[in-house]
Structures are given as structure tokens and as C-alpha cells.
Length: 232
Image (spheres, one colour):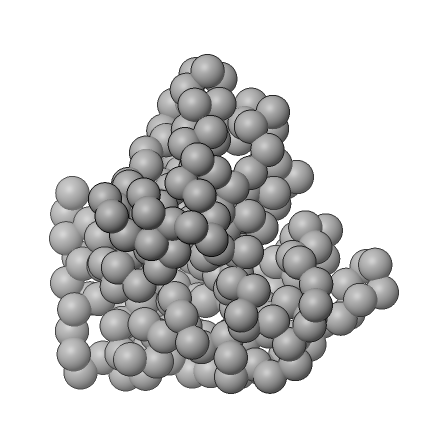
């Protein structure tokens, strides 16, 4: 509880230094290239000399392309640049134009960045919205051992894969009036995880909210604090 309060306090300090932003491109094992943004927090937000937590953010379909500025439109990148004081390294790759998230490519990138950036391997967290919500569920099914927690937003996964990540802390979000990705996408994953005897799953449904269930979620410091409390 003490650590939770500390994280919440840090994230509400308005004078916190802006994160250090950098851009990169990584050639993954498939031969494809993924461009990404990396945000490193003010050192004052993290214990000195210790491996750092990492949050991986997967954007939605509207931010695909070859312009990394588009990745800042929603989610943690927006919060970081607005001075939210996020106490973790943030990795935000960009999906190539006309494609969907390739699970193997994203996993390869995460492993590369984690090694290069002195990341705590027990504190890697995954989140995404819409197309990125689908990507989050799919990547969890492929490499559950990589993550400490996940926050899929208005996405959907394959219920048959729930057993692979039934013991992972997951907090899902969805609007009940979502017409782009119906709320059943999350409800079916919830049912599958309950059937698999999931140990730490929770879901928040925004009554009457449409597809944009991410603005409300990513502007809530408690979501980030919850992630920071999780560790493999």
C-alpha cells in the first residue's frame, strides 16, 4: 500500500520533468523492421542503480504508418508528454501501414529493448487499445512468460488461449456501447479466464461508452499504479 501511494503521488506532480524521448528502428528476426518511440522517465521517479520497469503500448489502427508522431495521439505517450510523471520506461512501436500487429515481431522488439535499456525482466507490462487490444491478447497467448501484467482495452482475443495466461494479472477495459469492437470481445475473454480458474483477472465496463474507452482509462493514475505493483 505504501508503494502504491508513492506511485500515485509521483504521477500527480505537475512540475515533473518531461521524459526523454528517442526514436529507433529495429530489424526483427523475421527480417521486418519496426520503428518505435522510447520514453525514459525523469531519473528522480525511479530508484537509482536498479533495473527499470517497462510498459509496452500498442496503438490502434488509426496510428499505423511511417510517421512516429502519430503514435503520440492516444494513450501512455500522450500522458508522458503531458507531464504525468510515469515511473517507467515506455516503449511505443508503430505498426506498418496496412498491417496488423505481428506478435513475433513485437515480442522480438520487446526482448531487444529490454536488453538494451537495463529493464527489469520481472516487470515488463503490456497494454494496447482497439487493434492494440487485439495485439495485447494475442501476444499474451504467444509469450505469457514475458509479462508481469497486461491491460487490454476495447480489444478481443481467442478464448481458447486463456489457459496460457490464466495466472497473469490482467485488467481489461471496454465500453458497453462500442460498435467498432463489440464488448463481447472482452466478455468472452472474461468467461474463458473464469473457466480456466484465472487467479487475478478484473474487467471494467464503461456503461454507455462507445469505442473510446482508452482516454478515460489511460488518464487514470490508478491504472499505472496497479501495473507497477505487479511483478513476475
